[in-house]
Image 1 (cartoon, rainbow, N blue to C red):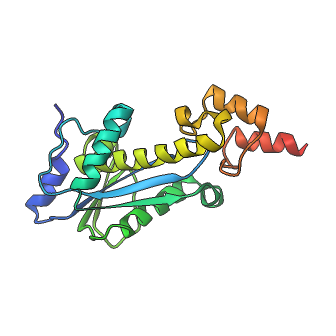
Image 2: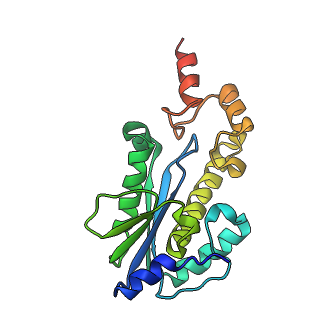
Image 3: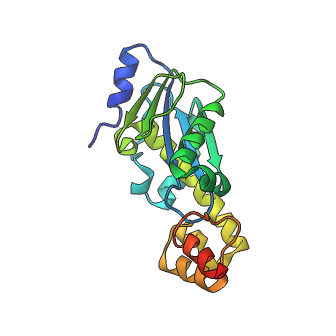
Length: 205
């Protein structure tokens, strides 16, 4: 079994006690916000089966989410909506969501472990490619961010059931794209994303 505590262990050896794992979800969907989480776990924390949220079933994610928000020393959730994504682009919006998540932690991390991104912050940080499957702290953040965003999509589905958001979570599935072509777009759609952008251009003609 892969050791997901290597990065944390190295930092603990250096005397770091408050390690903030950071991850985001929602870069690819056509609708809704990008959501990031910064999660500070207790030292030497263990939660059997916890890994990258993409590798977990929805039921497992929900279960781990409940445990993590109870056990975490602190966690913050950053939400950047589709309007800002369209204004600044998804890469910049992701950084904003991550910085927002850090600011929402009621305890300031001493070191950040970030999934793939580099952030402009005064806190020392390590950027880890595929960090959500290499660091327990990042995996915890990925679960909290994923469950948070998925719940938002389930709520949006209640208002607009024709797009099937409860199943596709805003990603461009065949059913979602067909619904855009049939019913048009809603204000929560990202206007700079294909095929939303193409739909807007077609309607203008």
